[in-house]
Image 1 (cartoon, helix red, strand yellow):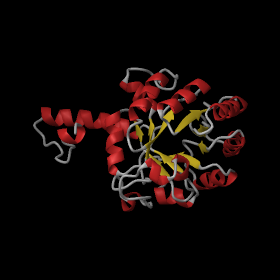
Image 2 (cartoon, rainbow, N blue to C red):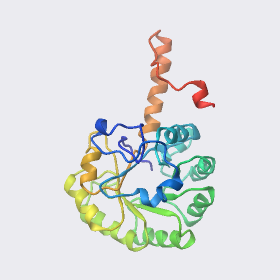
Image 3 (tube, one colour):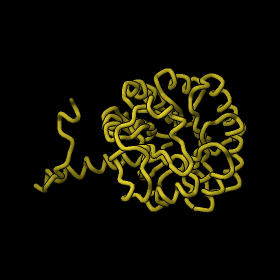
Length: 275
């Protein structure tokens, strides 16, 4: 299930202005994966990785050229682009295929494999993913912790980001969120993700509760990158924002043509997209 979110600062370059989002950018020019010492090293508490989520090669290539060091896949974007429902593990095969197509780009890729399985995590790793995101769906945390252990045993070099849905599928219980992320970290998770959490005090508690890098979702009316960084966040996911923004731009541009209105001038050229 792909969370909705907004973008922000990145381990990136000129794609996002730190002044515009209230945060500090990590880097300047396009970042080679080899130059940054691995995907895990991009997760720094207080200087968070901003992870744009993509559904195709063109978008990932554009983000790499803009200076982003990593992208994730968006389960909503991949599913919707293939006419499939999100949140039902229906498009995991399409996600793995996308990871394989992204493997040649100078950018780290992490795959949203929804509820996940050992088989899909191994397939993502074999396709070239640096990491996977697996969600607990607010189900049995013991089952999710076992999945984390099994994936780490089968693919020890894969960055496993274990998501809990305490604040996404429920109203938000900070004590339960802390219990779950500690269980997942103890099981071997490399990072923990709590989408939907928005209160500064809750985020600070989560960051302090585990050594694992804390991942949150950027929210349209939520905290700035600088504020999240000050609370100890190490990764901020954009979620389905880019996909939904692209859909809005498609309709907006088509209507502008139909109505004889101006279309924005700073679009990528044909050669930019097809060099």
